[in-house]
Amino acid sequence: MPSDLRTFLKEWSASHPEEVHTIGREICVKWETTFVQAALDKKGRHPILIFRNSRNFQGERTPHPLITNLFASRRRSAASLGMEPRNVAAQYGERVAKKIAPIVIDKSAAPVKQTISKGGEVNLHRFPIVWHHETDPGPYITAGVVTTVDPDSGISNSSLQRCWVKAPNRTGLYLTPTSHNFRNMQKHWARGEDAPVAVWIGHHPAALLGAQVKVPYPEEHFSRMGGLLGEPLRLVASETFGEKLLVPADAEVVIEGVIPRERWEAEGPFGEFPRYSGPQLPNPVIEVSCVTHRKDAYWHDLSIGHLDATIPGIFPTEAAIYEAIRRIIPDVLNVRRAPYGHNVYVQIKNTRPGLAKDVILAALPVYPLVCKYIFVFDEDIDIFEDTQILWALGTRTQLDKDMVVVPGSTASPLDPSVPEYGVGTKGGFDCTKPAPPEPGLPPRFSPNLTIPDEIGQRLRLDDYVDKKKLDEIQEEEVYW
Amino acid sequence: MSASIHGTSDGSRMEMNSKEIFVTCPGCSGYFNISYLFFTPKFESVKLHCPRCGQEFDKKDSLKTW
Image (tube, rainbow over all chains, first blue to last red; front, top):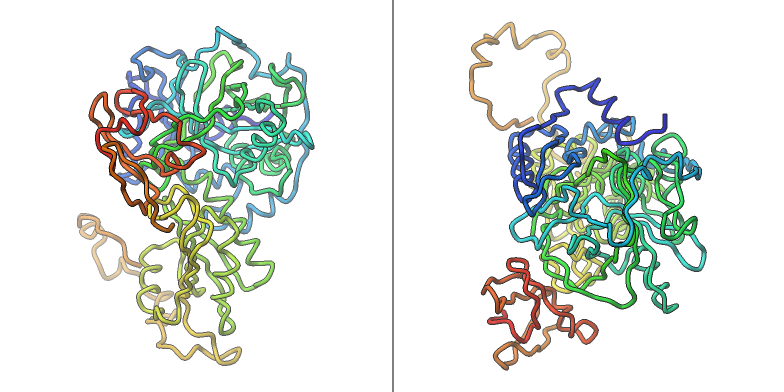
């Protein structure tokens, strides 16, 4: 059986039943589902949520279940790829490097063709498309992978992009000028044509994460998705454009249409992943010509501004930065991109003066819209522990010599501090101790506090402190 | 971004050095943030859309712009 959203849900429900919550109580997708997710985030609990009795933003009952929070757990997201949550940077790159070519199947065998609506039959409001935050202008497709085609080569490009559902058959489309989908769109427009587009929703987490892999232009993402899935992705011809625009056969929903030439409309404001409501922008639109879906299709939503929406961007970034640094600096050990902001933490074995600065300069241009501040740490700092990160920042840096500042760099339009659209100041912090004067010697720096290993092997805490009484103490923030 | 000058709803000129500008809907008086791109020649004629009441309006009709 080919991998898809359903095979993942079945496997995960069997192995981790406590992490899949099916909710029968009625709920409206306008702000109410976001409230549930935000409350869970505060509790540090990140189950998959399946709302089976939801109403759309107009208060109408929808026949489709809403699935969300799929990516809210780093551990679960890594496991969906067969990876360790703290070792994605190294493992992800290896997997996507092994491309597996997709296969094209007949429409009759494609689950996503079970129901087909064309022209006047198209009604996006039948799906529980979530209206996330108070400042948003309406419901947004947030887990939609937008696929366009380069008209010169015929090669497709896929990427997660947000789409504001403006009408039953029309959406806004947020495209940054640096994206390959934007480039494809402009090439069609330069020929005097509308740009063909498909937005597909709901698939195995590995397929969605594969669509986020940074590839050269033009190169399609379907082989990378196959690399992460470990099997060929099944594709099928679109209804509107035939084999010129292929779409995943095992998706839950596919929306087809065109991006009309040189039509710009207001889009946003929209609450984005940095947890701010970004400004309204002039953006293109999609005129929807056809919607195909499974009869009982799930509607997948990424809860933007919450943990659920961070992982699809985090994993590819960590892998790309790790690979870029490793090419020139073999002493890189690990990379973590923090959720929400634009901070990246790199752990190295500091072997020589200047190494940490080289790391900063190598990492900054890798994902220019994402990497704003690069923090470089020694191997004794756990870059997944924020307390240790702040300790090293506060005790191993002197700003006049350890800070790198690069003004006038490419920057994220979603960063509210950036003064000009797409241009801002970036940089990094060398939070390492000085490199050892020669191999085998410690650095000229105050040693860390330690207790001999032998003590930890010989003594047990429970022999000295009453465990039952200890467990009754109110939990506090954990320092390492 | 170096500071630039844009016209506002009351006919005055305003210096802007931010990529975000706030406008006020003439329909519901609600305010919201827009990109400075709406003030550039390419997108000058694109109508704004109030996220609160849905009204489309020209930025010159904004009740207050800052």
